[in-house]
Amino acid sequence: MFNDTQFKIIFEYLKKRYGNHIGEGRHRITFESKYCVIKLPHNSAGYLANLYEAKLYKTDIYIRHRLAKCKIVYFGDFAILVMQKLNTSWHWTEMPSWSKHYDCQQVGTTRQGEWKAYDYGY
Image (cartoon, rainbow, N blue to C red; front, side, top):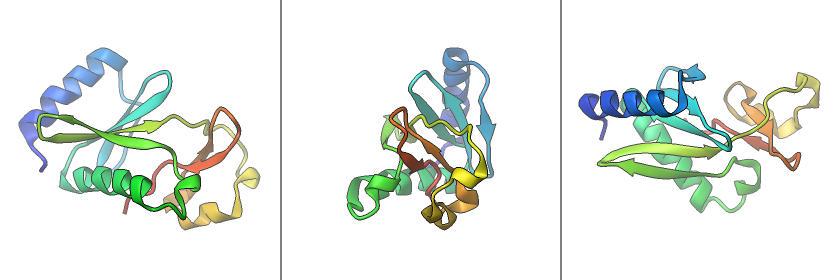
């Protein structure tokens, strides 16, 4: 589960490796590498959201084609979500109609131009 001490150690490691974080929400802080984003939970809800997104991507074959690829990487017992990086620079009129089913229509395109949701936790 969420551990404050582990969070601080991992946050400093990610900051040193990737620089400043690119975003922060209610539950997670996001870092960026060349090909992926790293979602670091900063509370228990973020920890559970990471587990949920990874499970949903892995098990829901009916909507997987709409979800950015992701997996859990553990640092000790701490679950970090590593997710496919998407292009989020586009005009809102270009979004697919199904994007309204995701929180704040958080979608983007892959390098191949496919639309994917990148925040599909609860």
